[in-house]
Image (cartoon, rainbow, N blue to C red; front, side):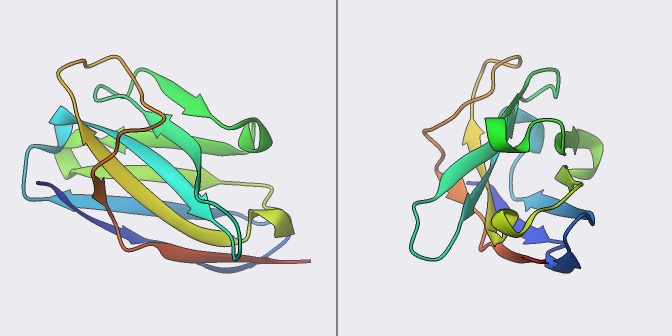
Length: 125
């Protein structure tokens, strides 16, 4: 099973940017599709972005379209979530998750089995 570690969270003012990283170890990361999720206090965890094994297919939740960009560097075993024009409602713990798949071109919205520990993103108004 792949192990995931998120980093890059922090405190930022509204309108600012952050880049989250999800570093993987343990298995061939290019065999995994990846999703980024977030969970605010008292709310359910929801997916905000996803990327296929190849990086060629991506998904974004409507609330982050045009502001967040997911990408990956399989040579570095890392997936990124670039977040711009951040809003106070983006404040959450952000998690990355990985799903082993034989399909290189598909992203997934569910079925993830490997999870990172999360990184806090706080956007002040």
